[in-house]
Length: 212
Image (cartoon, one colour):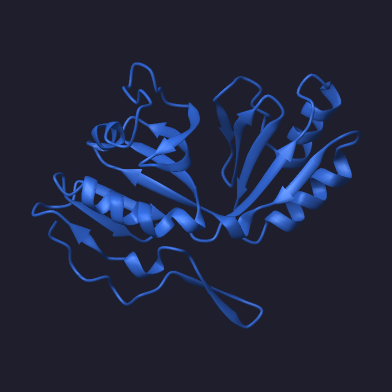
């Protein structure tokens, strides 16, 4: 693998006078392969992540989530819904992941708790996860290297999400378009997966970029 040195520019945000960094800030600008990068890996900057649990058969729960979040609750397995700032991903029959703009997760959690009644759970897991977007015409070929799940476009369609093993790590894989996917991973896997992606995508050319 031909790999350039990481750029010194860091992906940071200032919070109450302290600088916090994304797990992959030190990979910004890193490239692999001998060709013009065809695959781009971009880590979203410090998003808010909430795990929501409730009863999808309860109409007041479903309507309450949509009222509080502004996004329809996906009740079909392995699907997701989004608006401009927030996405909801189906994780299981009574479990969803909400990802919103960084800094908005506390307000969103409060709205959910104020709106929803009955047996529900909302947990902030922002500090333990990160979101990576992979784009490029060879994204599907890269996905096929990652594990045993069938990522062929006839099976893994746009609008679908799946929790699976990705390069021996656990991940939520989200199909945004035919040439773009999101990976939601644990922070502890971030360094390993960045190295794996740079290596596995080196035949196409790969670059780690800043979020637009």
